Amino acid sequence: MAVIQANEATFKNEVLNAQGTVLVDFWADWCGPCRMLSPMVDRVASRVENAKVVKVNVDDNMALAQQYGIVNIPCLIVFKDGKEVNRSVGVIPEKSIEELLKA
Amino acid sequence: MYDIVIIGAGTAGMSAAIYAQRGGKKSLMLEKLTYGGQIINTPDIENYPGIAHISGYEFSEKLYRQASDLGVKLEHGTVSSVEDEGGLFKVKTGDNSEFTGRAVILATGARNRHLGIARENELVGKGVSYCAACDGMFFRKKDVAVNGGGNTALGDALYLAGICNKVYLIHRRDQFRGAERDAEKLKVLDNVEFVLNSTVTKLNGDTKLESIDVTDKNSGAVKTIPVSGLFVAIGQEPENGAFANLVNLDAKGYIVAGEDCLTGHSGVFAAGDCRTKSLRQLTTAAADGAVAATAACEYIDRL
Image (cartoon, rainbow over all chains, first blue to last red; front, side):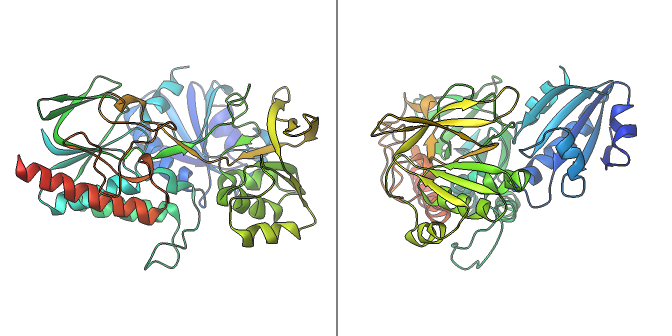
């Protein structure tokens, strides 16, 4: 599925009010591991049909990062019907990203 | 069937790939995470000859593009075993894929050493970090600790001192291994406190890190330091257990090989941080890649 950029204004609508599975990738431009993980997340997004993929730039959306207690990036959080069901920090293999979605 | 199977796509592995492909050998890189290796965590590289400044991410991208333009293949998987079947090497990965090569270059690198204490893994992402450059900003105006005494620890402490309220630098010895210049800089900062001859022995906090217990090596005294972040910079450790059947490992797990990158097992070469060596840097990893791949090409030509 397509990858959507979200911010503080759109997060509620794109993630919390969304039905089903949403994978959120919290990242920043200056974070090398984030930039390595990002294309892996994109490839997973292009393969899976049943999950929406959302990216949040933590520099522009610090309040969201604080709200979710994010202190390490890259950080992937999986939401199901608006509720957090899974979380992972650091670079992980693409297969592990897909595993996260199955929780 | 490949000429050379390179295990690891960090700086050593990708440098080896460039030399292998230019040497006319069909090569494959097997990588468990993503190409780049440890250097992707480094925001500023300023000691690579000929490049005054580049980020680790950009460096990795350029190196990968250079290698892939020469035709090297990249596959993802964690190598579980390498078997020598009469001069042909069968390389198996965790998902049961199998690759065959006439020669193997082990370029597995090293990973951040963990403290090895209770709750460490559980608190990663909740206060425990191995990358100050990635995570420091989340601790703006907070109290944090850095554990370690090498260049990484000192650099982390300097960086964090600029953004955090207070930085405790915890080191198990009374002197730092890292650059004297950085240690001197830290000494004069008001918000940096050295906690020497001490180790981190306990991590406290319910859902996130709230404090650490630090034990003085000499007196045995334990003190609790309230911090919301702990940056662990106590060095690297190799991951070569899967190759113990093939090559000799030293007591720390590094592959025993000299500057010629020869392992003692015909057709198996070791390059970069994964082998025994005195200086683990980008330049020495790149140099090893060249040496190992050239030796592998010559080995194949003699077959």
